[in-house]
Image (cartoon, rainbow, N blue to C red; front, side, top):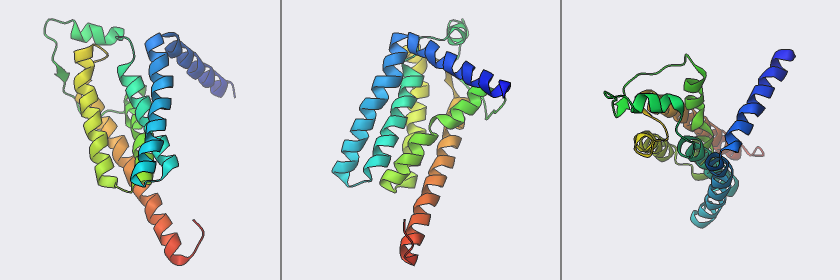
Length: 183
């Protein structure tokens, strides 16, 4: 029980630390709320499911807030300040550290709910991978992080899993409708 409470306390401390930085507070609170409203509006306008559309917008807002509104991390400035710094560090998949797993999870909520909203699994997967690539390219240009192929690969894996799960949920709903079971 003590380990769980310690982990929750660490999570709360991390969240409070992020919220102390004005750009992060705006990025992870205001941005997602705004994009959730836009997701609701777009879903309504295009005939998609509204609640998943809003949740997809919220997820995209969190992705953008976490990746682009933070201040330059010390570890990123060490890499980018180097005389021989690469524009983008090339590495493969890794699940060794917490950050790598967070990158796998980063796009998952947005991708899952976007599939539920639109029913367009392949398009959602392409958009998630494209957005991840754009973020990786923009981070060094804006000095908000470093470009790493590992992040792109991990983000893409998480998005692919979430898209697959979303497609399975939609297939289950279609099967239930055909059988007359309540959805």
